[in-house]
Length: 233
Image (cartoon, helix red, strand yellow):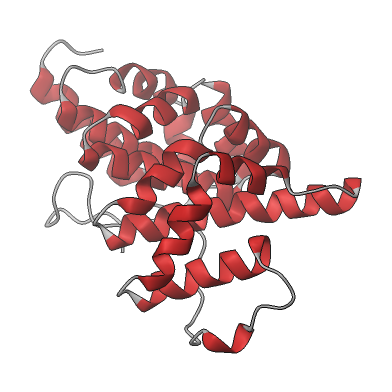
């Protein structure tokens, strides 16, 4: 690792831009042992470096399942989840994208790993922030987890274990509150989650408006005109 912070920041930006490309380009970066360096940078004393590292990882976890597994094998997710819980909001945002992307493209076992590492509570905490886009990211991640829990419940003739965890984290209360959100996409997503994973047959499904469902995975192109960390849409 270079000793000059400005060199590290420039190199990190270059790597981050490369992994906004396709899976082949991302794999070239992974083949250069980038994840070891990114793991180290997540503990940088500079918040801007930690944020940029999270942003870079979020584009890696938007790749294929082998690339998500490489992030798991590098033991990066426990650090990301800690960041999601405790860091400054601008860095938490990038960590949220990284985790939600992994819940979208990951295998069932990979998603279970994320749950076992404790991602549900921090995602639920993001449901009360003012940033509407991050609320949507958190909702999408929780929905992906709930969908897996629903399948597990069907296979074992039981209850959805992840719905129970979300309730224990007061996530259900927060999702219910989002049904009064001024953003119609958030309202619709919250309504759908409540109806599908927590609702009863007696509830009237006709009261919700119809909007196009959000794409569940995000892979972002680089743009030097946007701030460090970029805009994800």
